[in-house]
Each structure stands twice: as C-alpha cells, then as structure tokens.
Length: 537
Ligand code: NAP
Image (cartoon, rainbow, N blue to C red; front, side, top):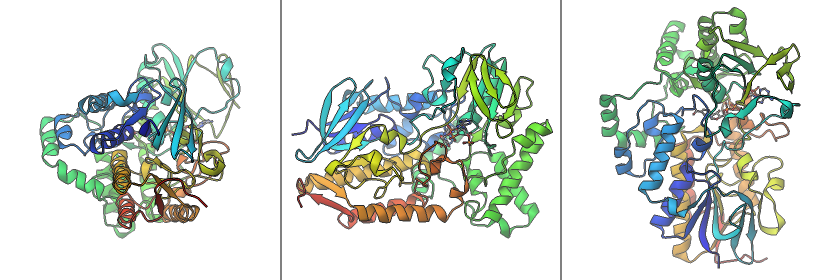
C-alpha cells in the first residue's frame, strides 16, 4: 500500500491550495515536497529588485475563503514579491498546512509502478516515497534559463539569475552592473538597479513593448470598496478570457476614427497595467487593429527617451504588441534618460563571450562587477521534465514530449496514470491571472479524486487519441490569435535553444476552458479511463 494518498510537488499557490483541499475536504494523507526552505513557489525564488506581480493584488489571491480574503489587506495596487511571500506564509499558517510540507527537499525522479498502482518518488534528502496520486504543482516559470555564453566561469565578479535571487540580496552600491534581458523581469529590475548602482548597462537582444503599471498604495477607501464587491470581482474574473476582472472593449480598434482611438489609448496608458490590451476587442486577433496599439506605444517610447539612437534601439519592430507576454513597468523607458544607464543593442553587436573583466560583444568589452541574467525560463515543460518522470510501459516524459508537450486538457498525459499537472502545458495557465487557473485546476482534481474514492476507483488515465485531439485544439486556439507571431516568445519555447517550437498554453480562454473541464466531469470523466486497479490487455 502506498504510504501517501497523494504527493504534491511544490508549495506555491497551487501546491498549498491543493494540499488544503485534499487533506481538509477529502481527509487524505498528503505530503507536499518543496525544494525551497519556505513556501512561496515562484515568489520564493524571484526576489530580484523590482519583482512585483502584474496582476492587481486584490485578485492575485485566493478566492476560496471569504474570511481569508477579508482579513488580508494588500498595501499596493500591484503586490511586491515580499508581500506575496508574506501572504502565502499567512495562508500556510492559517490553514495549518506546514505540518504536511517537507521543505528543502527536491524530487530527483518519479516512477509509476504499475503492479503497485502507485507512484514512487525519489528525493534528494528523504529517500523514496510512495503515493497513489502524484500531483505536480511546480509552476510554469521555475526552471531558470541561463544562456550558455562562453567564459562565464572566468568572470571575476558576481553573477546572478533573477529567478534564483540570493536571499541575502545583492548590493549594487558603487558597482558597474550588466543586465542581460528585457522581458518582464529585466524591465522591472532595470530602474531599481539603476537607482542604486554606479552604472547599469542593459544588454538588449529584442526590443520590447511595455505599459506603465501606475502602481500606487491602496488607500482605505479603495480597499473598502474592493472588500464590499469581492464576490462580483471574483465572479467576473472566473467568467473572463484571462482571469482578470476587467471589461474587454467590444469595439474594434478599426471601427473608431484615429482621434477617438488615440484618446482611448491615452486613457488606457494613464490607467496603466495589463488592461491596456483590453482597450479594443481585436488587439490580439487582427494584425491591423494591433498595429494601431503597437504604433501608439512606439510613439510613447520616442516621446519618453531623449536620445534618438537609444529610443530607436528600444523600439520594438519585429513582433506585434502583446504577442509576447506584455511587461508592465515603473519608469522603464525613463531609466534610459539617466546619466548612469546605457543600452547595448545586441542585434547590432552580439555578445561574443564573458571575460574576467566583463562582457565582450562584437564591438568591445563592457567592464562589469556584477552580471544579472534576466534571461527567463525554460517555461512550462522545463519544471516538469526536471522531475525525471517515467510512466507505464517504459514511457518517459522527456521522450514522450520530445516534439512538444502532449496532454489531455493540460491535466494528464497518456501513459502517466494518476498523475495530474496543475497549470501545465495545454491549459490556460500563463495566459491568465494565475490564481484563477490554479483554483479551477485544483478544484477539478479534488472533485475527480473524490469521485474516484466514492466509486472505489484507484486509477485514472487518458489515451493517446485524447491527447492528440487536445494538442490539435490547443494549436488551433493559438492560431486564432496573434500569439504565435512572436518569434522569440517563451510561449513557443523559442527562447531555449533546441526546444521544440510548439505553442504551449491554451489560448481558448479561461472561462471556456473551465466549461470544457466541467463538461468532461459531468460526462463521467469523458476521455479518461477510470478503473479499480491495474489495466490488463
Ligand atoms: P523572458 O520574457 O523570456 O525574457 C528574457 C529576456 O532575456 C529576453 O529579452 C530575451 O531576449 C533575453 N535573452 C534570453 N537569452 C539571451 C541571450 N542568450 N542573450 C541575450 N539576451 C537573452 O523572461 P522574463 O523577463 O523573466 O519573463 C518571463 C515571464 O515571467 C514573463 O513573461 C511573465 O509571464 C513572468 N513575469 C511576470 C512578472 C510580473 O508579474 N510582473 C515579472 C517578471 C516575469 P529575446 O527576447 O531576444 O529572446
């Protein structure tokens, strides 16, 4: 008999809530394994200067407990990393979750044992454990992508990746800092590092769009209004395409005259944040409509950045706005007006190597004391493949996903019975406000396991045919949008050399996806085979 009913990997938003449900609603014997020395998931690792969520704090939070949502007071429009860690620590304490979490423990392998109808999970510090259900709550953006630039070992200074930020912090005072990467992370970090360092050099490969976040403290009045309308806010988030509780305009960008369009973009720019994408109905679907937004932002960059050469280099030309995940910022473009900040355009002169003294491009050596890699993640599949998962009949996930991830609903992969993936590839995950996707997934998994227990069933698996049909649907949903048009996007795996180029998240919309999952459950878990024990033949 397996020792645990369920083992969950990861103690971030998803692992904590999944534990709470399985243990406190179903009465299961559950263990969470977590590599970090505290709960927090993404927010445990991402402590770089400026790290802040781009969903607004009051809805980047759990909705399952009204008491929790009323008692936790967020301090700013967008929560800073440390505030999110405090929140998740509070959740762990409030629901007494810590006693079922094993910290400082890394999964080294997970193997399905067909005869035992159980998962055997090897860890680096607590031996091998067994469980009936194996649930990955490892996050989508947790495997750091550190580019293989020759010479890094020879660098005489300090180097860090933003997704593995030292708990003690990094002191930039008086230092010459090089920052590689201008995605959401680099764009958040640059202004904060520039304010402390003697000099900051930003190494940019692809210019990016960014919208001002307009972060601000949440005043009492605003907070009370949120508290009073929380039910409606949650309802709206769940009914939306992307898990955000704001309205998406029903007007096409091409159906208003240029003056009215400019007025609406101006208003959205002043409001700030990801809702800029919602200014018109078709910014993510129609290239001509999108061009109006892309041009508006290019105009803003030209207006903010004083040096015309720097402004031109910062202007994104190779992809439509929001086809890559759009960053939001606090004074990013303004940072390039500082005397102690320089931009290096790697398209003009690529990095050749790192030397003891700094970074050498095709042009020259940039002397540095600290290099910050804001180079992103091996997204979605990376954290799962790192678990070294092998399934039934000699299947291994690395081989099975060699040409791209394959799953049914993003929840289960054929040949891996009793394994569930929370917000994995093939689910809306990163295209949404994550807690909404996480609550939907974990609640679905909990209901599924409850159903199995009520029926005396011990095994659930899906088929190749279901995975094939779902992967085709994921592909079709992506191609109904402009999202596949960004060549270097991590949605496509294009940021990691050698990774298959497959659009991984499900772009069909959060509410639509949740409806499909509900229908599947109502139809007796259509597409899954539920059985008493080992399948034969
Ligand atoms: P990212 O979007 O993948 O950006 C990585 C950056 O590093 C890109 O500019 C990339 O250039 C550059 N890069 C990668 N390898 C390089 C190399 N060998 N040489 C030079 N440049 C290189 O990663 P991220 O900024 O960490 O963001 C990842 C995701 O995390 C975001 O999209 C978002 O979903 C999430 N995130 C959210 C927040 C938030 O809530 N506010 C904050 C941070 C991150 P190319 O574009 O040319 O590949």
